[in-house]
Every structure is written in C-alpha cells, then in structure tokens.
Length: 378
Ligand code: SF4
Ligand code: FES
Image (cartoon, rainbow, N blue to C red; front, top):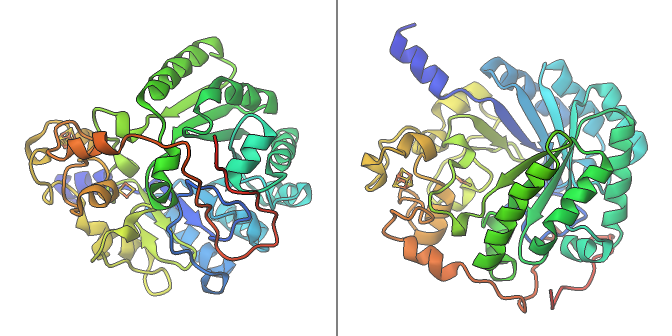
C-alpha cells in the first residue's frame, strides 16, 4: 500500500457506529435528534441483520457501538442485539431514556456483555423533568434504572440536554448525576436539528444564560475534579467557530437508522439530493467507501470560501453540513455559526428564545404512555 493510500485510509477510518435500533420511544423530548419523519416498527432491521452489520463494522475498524434509538428498550430482542455486539468484539454503550428497560432486562444485558450505559435526564426535579420529557413518572424510573446500573457495576454516564427550560439548574443536575453514582456527566446544549429545530424558539436560551452556564461548568469541574468527569458541548448559536460536526463528514463515524439506511450523521436526510445506501443491499465497507452520501462532503474539495482557504478547515471541517443547509439552503456553505461566514448574521437573528412558545413533543404514533400537558410557561 502506498503512503498516500495509507494516509487516506487513516484519515477516513470509522471508529464509532450509532445503531438506531428503533424510532419508537415512550418519551416526547422536544429536542429529539431523530428526524421529523420517523421509521415505523414494521421497517426495523431484525437482530440477525444487526449482527451482520456489527461484524462488518468491526472488520472496518469500528471499536464502539452505541445502541440507541428512539428508546432501544422498545426492542424485545435488545439482549440478542447486545450479545451480537459483544460477539463482534465491539465495546457497547446503551443510550437509553431509562424508561422501558426493567432491572431484569438490564441484568440480561450485562450477562450478554453490555459495557456501558448512558441515561438522559431532563432536569433536576421530577415535575419539570417529566414535563420536558412529555411523560409522567419518567424521572423516577430513570433514577431507578441508574441505581441498578451502578449496583451491577457498569459505568454510567448521565446525559443532560440543556435549553432555556433547565439551563438555570446545571449545578443541581450535576449533583444529581453525582448522587446517582455516574462517572461522567455530559452537559450538551441543544443542537438545532430535527425536533429541536422545530422547537427552536421554545428551547433557545438567552446569551446571558449561556455565558453564566459556561462559567458554572468551569466552576463545577474545579469543584468535582476527581469525582466525576464533566463534558460540555457548547451551544452552537453563541459560538465563534463551529463544531467539527461528527468529527468531519465520513471521517470517523456512521449511523445506521432503524430501517438500515446508513447516514454520515443523524440529520443528513434533511439535505436534498443525497443518496443513502442501505445495509440490506450493501456491505458496510461498500457504503463507507462508495456510497454517494458519504462521498458528498469528504475532504475539502466541496468547500467554498471562506472555508476553502481557511487554516481551520482541518480542525472544524467547515462546521456542520446539515446546519449550513438548514440555515442557508446550501449544504456546501460555511456553517453560519462561524463568525467568518457571510451568513453569520442569520445566527445572531435567530439566537433569541421565547418562553411562551409551547413545546411540540416528538411522537411516533399515539401511545399508551401518559404524556403530560404541553408546557406553556417555563
Ligand atoms: Fe471553519 Fe470555515 Fe469558519 Fe474557517 S471559515 S473557521 S474552516 S467554518
Ligand atoms: Fe449532519 Fe452536522 S448534523 S453534518
């Protein structure tokens, strides 16, 4: 293999696979990263296809699989799927709402080789958390599952999605994560795609709130150093430079959606004209190397100015393609979050929230769960 080919292989080496096992979920989080058009149960891949996909992923060099959704606990064959991840030699992380996985199922998942659990929490108190999740009783069930994860000796990450309805309680949410026995807490400001884009006005915090939150996170890191790892994802709309979304398009990760479509990122379907290949017709290696969607924004040939000649293009890869499209209608544009973008003014205009706008909850179909009333004042 020539040096150039070897360098290219290393530059585009997938390390993580997001396995969206289902779009079904009892919760209705208004910032859900799933697309607005959700896959139905009848189109979901079965466990044997997932097992093949995991084997192909491992052969491609993938190290870690995130068993995600929707709520993966909605799959009756989740234990079989987790066992397949272990059989393929992948480190497996279950990303769960905490609702829909019983202690019994968790025990079986551990026996099947599950390595790690990530549970989302919506707020530090039950009433607000349940209202944000759109599901009464979710908070209590999340706490119970977290306790069980720790009791079984699995590492636990608590994921906190921050927005204007909970941004004032970051210290209390970190305290909750500590009390639950988490080894890591992720403070992730909402990213505005999918349902979050639909709910942008209701979710967007004010600039002062974001600045205060950033200072609080720094203080919390100092205070809890050595007790819990605090990761923070900065809020896009108030940043100076964009994030290196998904580590660069088609460079480090792939998403397989419930029906088998393979996407370079969770929001890629919003970009018109992209052709996504499906694991039912192609191997993961074929898709990674040749599918039109993965090739669309690899490297830097597609970039326009100012990215094309910017020294940061190897750092942030021009930002997020989906955000560039959502805000400008052009997926090859510089992410408008970048202050060098000619469209940066758009972001400033949109960076205002409205506490009186109700959430539009994410729902797949009418559910037997107990959704709470829409929030009208936060
Ligand atoms: Fe990144 Fe493009 Fe902005 Fe440069 S101009 S910092 S590459 S988004
Ligand atoms: Fe698609 Fe950022 S979410 S590239």
